[in-house]
Image (cartoon, rainbow, N blue to C red; front, side, top):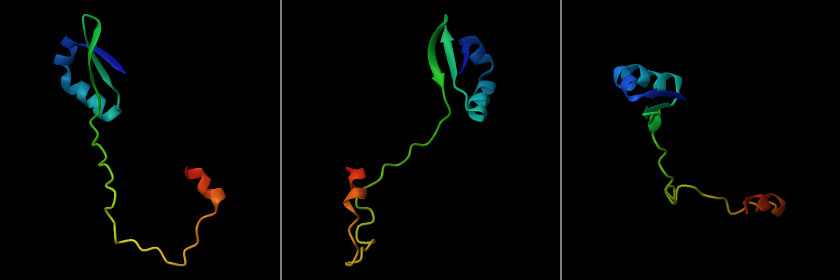
Length: 76
C-alpha cells in the first residue's frame, strides 16, 4: 500500500493511477496525516447467477443412479 498526501496526489495523479493499475497496489491519500481515500484497481463485478436460467435444457436420464449417502453428506 502506497501512502501519499493530497498535494503529491494532485501533482502525480497519472503516475499514481499507473501504479494502481499496473502493480495492483492500493494508494491511500491523506490529509494532515489522516487517511481520507483509497484508490484501488477497478474490477467488474460478477453477475449473480439466475436460478432456472437453463430450465428445460438439461435432461437427466431416468435410469440415473442416486449418489451414495456417504458422498451426499458432504453437501448438507
